[in-house]
Image 1: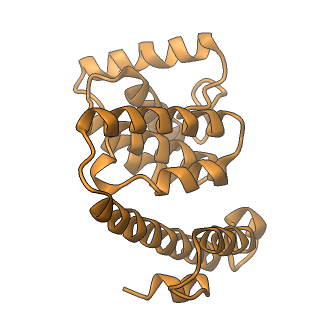
Image 2: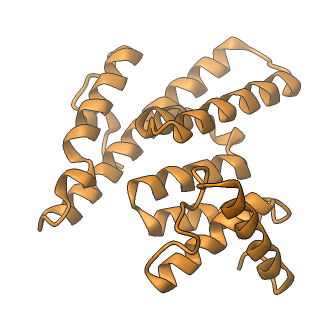
Length: 200
């Protein structure tokens, strides 16, 4: 794998703030929205994925090294922290602060990446217009927690949207569903789909 620090153009000795700053600067520069209708859009998307992977790798390395040196943390404490963090990420997504939401999500340790993590990542990808990646993450969330109607509704709505070229309810797959009625309709549809074999 390419050295993640080289991808972000920083030294391995860079502070966490410098890592974040470098990531944000590159994310602004290569964000696919800047290349809409541009022949370089595919290259920009590849570069953005490389930047996200590099940032994810650095954050994971640093968290793991700190976790190893900080000693034992109870499962209850880890669970409570994870729940709180995911709630914060949902609020960021709902308020349109996608880059900040992704930054927090990417910082979640590999061992804590549960169904909710994949659902939120799918929501972020959907917001960015990366529907293939969004679909894969919604599918993973469904596989990890097949009883969750919110995950199933987002997955099935996105499948319908991809097949028909528009949103089933004029809304949004993932966290940013539009109204209560739309959410109910999505969940009703998800239930029908689940009765016929679940998310897949």
